[in-house]
Length: 405
Image 1 (cartoon, rainbow, N blue to C red):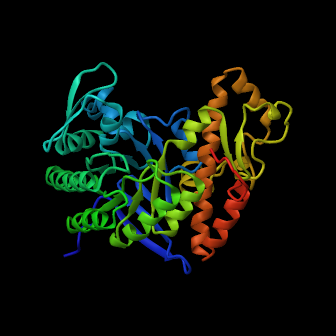
Image 2: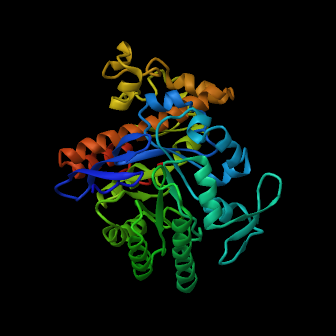
């Protein structure tokens, strides 16, 4: 009898010769997607300022939605009644939902943590709410996401060893409860989250116990929360090898270009972060030649393109299948913003026109999605280290006192 695969499973295509970076595909109920992959964040069922058609056009595959915010409003039961989150927001590709734990632990000061779960007041109207591993699973089952995350405790990186050990072990028990409660294994995949801050023995215990559960995928949590990039890479160096090679590996909350490449070098397949749209709304662009703060006066008379080296439309087969041959869009360097100058975008921000934030958000997402496309090619061609050096040079990481975001 043929073994039934989980709802989401990883197909390995190539290992980069010099680093061990992975090139693969994620098979999901809503399509097959190329990895390594960056997932734009649509906190409340919407990527801020970017519609779903544009997301496809610029090469988005997965997107991430936030369990806590959708639970508070409009409510997971309403979304279930509407046919699930994919139908509700008009997105027919893959969705990953977090557990809601990060928001509960970061937004609420009046929370009470027990083994059963956490009681807190929501940020909208102050209502008392209770989140447990089972409640997080019920909400995500109603949302219908392709990938669901277990509930864990989001704690500061530099807590004491004893506190982190206690929290990590509680998260393991919560992962077990989530797995027991999960009923829709044919249509939704539950990922576990490895915790333990910077302590190798705690990360090892967390990873080993989660691997025993034979979950469809695993995330590395508790990083990119204030520790240095050197420290994050140190933790990844001893954590990622503990995870199964035949399962997807997800690093939560990372979007800086150097960290994306460094994560891929260490065997990570999936990333997400609010960074590109958050800084875009404030007027900071991620470009092929580095950081641009478009509000600065120096751009008032800069009539050059926003980013002349960046192709806007993805050559992703998914986009071609969705939109067919779009003639002008298929030109090598076509961009709908190629005829818009930095001066114009500077004007939009100074005039408080919403279009400015929209253009900057779309641009930043396209920059990262294009970076991932190029990275996948670099892995296939066994030149990822050279690619890394070129990106760092072009973006300005090698400049003295470089400001990157």
